[in-house]
Length: 84
Image: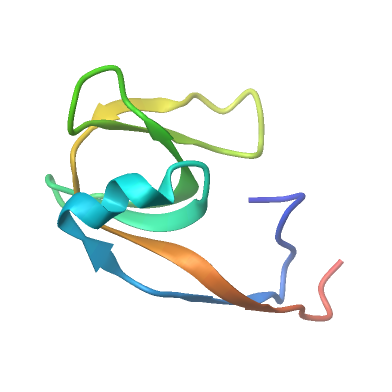
């Protein structure tokens, strides 16, 4: 997730489930899809109700579109490491 995060950064996330996920739109989150995949991405609203798009800071990475989520955990605290 460079340039926002660097090697050596410690990120603390807090898991949220269900309808509270929609409150996290636009935030950096660790997410688990209903198919069991985990990603660390920017959470965006999907084109259909109850779906989400997952975007990376590193472009031209493709956006993951139209996924349903089991849970999302936004970054709540960052301890900057000594990475470059």
